[in-house]
Image: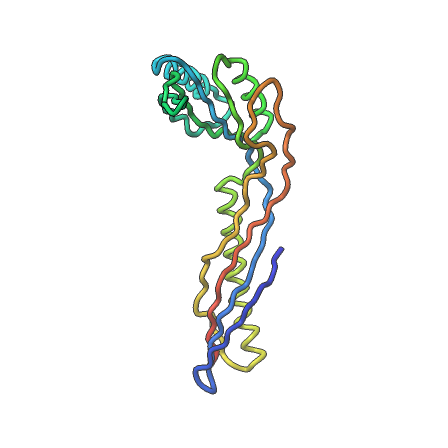
Length: 219
C-alpha cells in the first residue's frame, strides 16, 4: 500500500531544460513478530550487602531461564534517604535492576512472569510495558522492499515524464532520510506484578512509512 504526498518545485535553468525536486511517500504494513515485556526489580534492606545479595539471586534466576531472551540485568544499590524535620536521614538501602524479556510466543512471557513471581521474596517487581514489537530483522527487510519500490517508481516516473513532455528526463538522485517506524504495542504500563497479570494484547498490523526525496533533470 502506498500513499502519495508530492510537493513539487520546478527550477528553470534554461528555456529548454529544468529540474524537478519532490517527495513521495511509500507505506507498508507489517505484522509484529515478537512479544516483549520490560520489568523492573527493586529491593529494600538494612544493609548494602543484603540488598546486593538478593538482586544477585534474582539475576541468577532470570539469566538461567532458557525459555525467553533476556537483555539488561545491570543493577545498582544506593542509600535510601528520607527527610524529617528538615534533616536527611537514612533508612537502609535500595537497589534496582531492569530487564527486557522477549519471545516469539507471548505465552512464554506469561509463564516466565508467573515463575518469577513464585521466586519472589521481599522484592518489588514492576512491569513497565507488555506487548508486541517488530524485530529489527523484519523491519529492515520491509524497509529494503520499500526502498526498492521507491527506486523502481522513480525510474519509471522519469521515463513516463519523458514521453509526455517530449524531453529526456533522468533520475539524478534519491535521498532516503525520513522514515516512520512502528512502535511497541503495549497493553499495560507501570503495573506491579502481583497474583495476576494483564490480558494478552492484540497483535495488530503496524505501518512503516518511507519518504524519499527525488531529483530529476529534464532537457
